[in-house]
Length: 188
Image 1: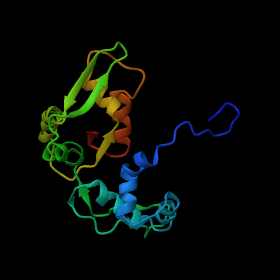
Image 2: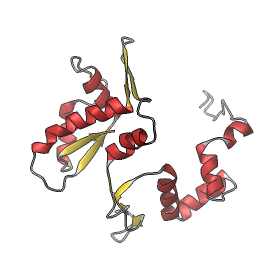
Image 3: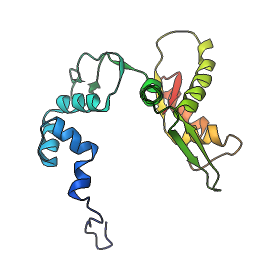
Image 4: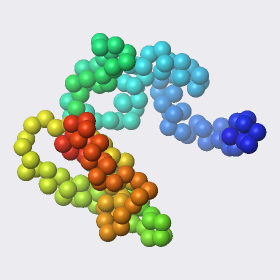
């Protein structure tokens, strides 16, 4: 946004660059000719759109969903992908290892003091597995899981001896997780 309040476009991709983008590939696969058409269809038929996006992204469900969108309780209470189950770790970590990217960076952390650390997908899988073992001693029952931003993960994994006031704390996140009835938190 310019200081005058007018919107300025500061960079436009070349046609060649734009043709190589993921959204251009998605539009070709869906036989859509323009962004305007994609936007219109996504608004008119959100079930079609989100089903196509989930399939394009290769999201792996451990139990298939019965439909994409259920608005039986009203549009103000939508249920997305009802009956479907997915595993965050499988989708965010394991599928990258399965795809041959185990030694590529999964997380790159850099502290304010310039220190940095990188975890590969394989190292991240090891950390996730180690931390998940702690929850195995809890009673087994269906568990609601909450997802947290990487900031929490980076703060606690990479800099456990330093407290951070710039982001969520374990205490504040724990309060939020408890308030919605979660018993576990998935760090994605």
